[in-house]
Image (tube, rainbow, N blue to C red; front, side):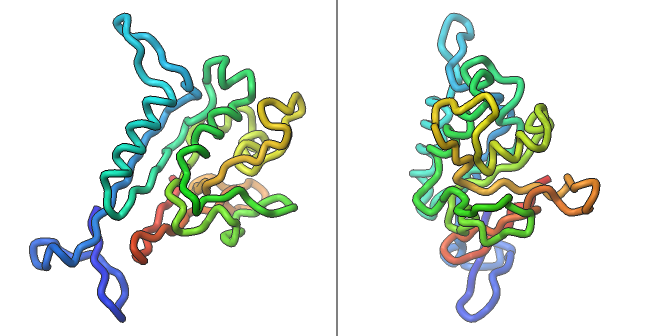
Length: 206
């Protein structure tokens, strides 16, 4: 992905062939999906494969090789249909794993009341935060209420588990194509705008 920025003018897309390549800002989008709580490696052909440690190593290595940084995108089904190491703890460990990949600009939501879809002043929406997530069908396996608890924090009725005060995700979740039946509004913010060297980049959840 490449974008161009000029002083005193809006950021916009350009045909790279018609422009000076040195004026382009390049960055990486590192996407993955269908993690399904696979925190521990599996064995394939009698060799260990996958797992949270391996995925984190790849993501951090690729991020470090990008001079302008990288934005990590998880595209859904991060939880649900999970092995016991995650499922028995209501998939809280899988969200905690993602939190470990965030940079210093990501934060837990510092709000007392239930987070509404319009709450773009949520602390997790700092445009410099390097991670954004969206929903797959398995995020809804245990209902919208439990899905929102995983994102926004709160103690499960059978908890607490690893954390006495589970705080949820340190990064924003976005979804534009799931709305509340009563209000007609998205159940989560539909988009988030990140910044790469001052250039706004929108991520729409769908």
